[in-house]
Image (cartoon, rainbow, N blue to C red; front, side, top):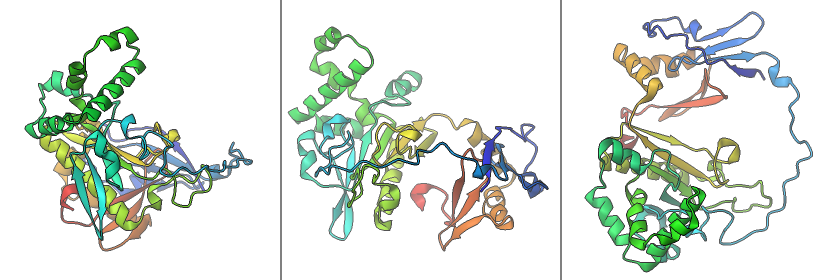
Length: 348
């Protein structure tokens, strides 16, 4: 195994046309075995140095996972089924209905425990791009649909208690004095709850914290533990959320979806979830790729599956997609290219 060294060089800052360059510029093996890789779409250069993968690693060889004390229903973190009120009110949940699935919307806080689920779509309490960002920069207002959902939710006194307690908790974490928090009336908290119904940072949360037959605290439920059918529904709910966000906020230009599962990746909880973040710009990498597509509409085939096939980097393939070993990434990466004629995720 080779070691990866990320250099962050941008080989193509002069913006010359890359569609007609030699593939060897992007993937080249040196006489000593070092592989130099440059990601065609980002310009990031990575060296794979022969022998580095055999260096000693400072792992705890004596690690022994702790025995898991099972709780059913699970209550290990704020994303677990018994702790609905630890996080903002959900927008929808995916429920198994016989051999099929259905979406259940509009539940109030007192109804959360009445309907089982596989996944929940929930606003993020600590937004990366806040509702105030959209309001102050774009004069963004909640849509009629969003306002109706909020009004429906607030009909339940338990829902109001949920909102007040949650926002008080957030304010304490932000360092707001306790006397100032206690002086605020309920209507102020209800007004501040708009972010839970019209914000652009959400999560898709799986039901299980641990695997069905978990024995130790290391037996966390991962996306690889989902069935094929469940994984499809996980993606469908994520895509539905993306579509809904863009339909209700015309200022969104791009949506980032990522699964920063477990603490080493920056997650607050070791509970399987995806994050969805709406932003108002494309960013340098997307702008670069747009320029490339303008020059060559086939560029993603040229530097995607075609490039991988010529360099023996195809990992797997079926009738619907091809998985390739990605080059020029900070960490070893597999890239998946759809074979569908449809370009947008919600059209697949």
